[in-house]
Amino acid sequence: MGTVTIGVSIAVPEPHGSKLQQLRAGFGDAAAHGIPTHVTLLPPTEVDGAALPAVEAHLAEVAARGRPFPMRLSGTGTFRPLSPVVFVQVVEGAAACSWLQKRVRDASGPVPRELQFPYHPHVTVAHGIDEAAMDRAHEELSDYEAQWPCTGFALYEQGADAVWRKLREFPFGSATVPPQAGRVESGSLPTR
Image (cartoon, rainbow, N blue to C red; front, side, top):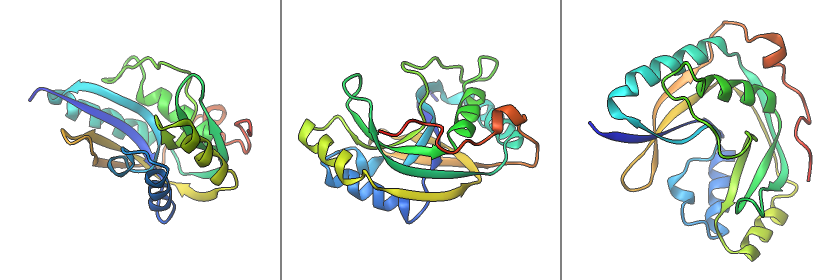
């Protein structure tokens, strides 16, 4: 079967997802239409295609231990100059996202993964475009707001055409998240 590139993320629901995707394309980000609007839990990772059933079983286990939590986006931030990214900030739900991504990438699971940078939940709205367009994205979305109840996450695969497609959704189960890890803190990320 060969290797496949997968990612795990929380989808930004409609109408917010399409709106942010259109804005991202409007800022000149050529990859915008191939990437559903999301909060990453596992960045693009190559795995053996034969390992997908084990990955899905692991993700189902992580989801079974999770519980729904409120997600709220507000304002913008950037990773520049370290990385050419402008994003909408996750200001509620960040602690729960962090808890989830640690379990998805756990060394005992089928997709152990070290991160290039410390985990910082966000929604990318511009990546790798010229500085003026990055500045415009940062400014135009500085007062952006959206909220929804997060009820699960999904596994995606990147096709040969560079488009990310959902393979399977993983709704949260009724198991309890450890209180200290699953606590959702409003304003847990600094505002910029």
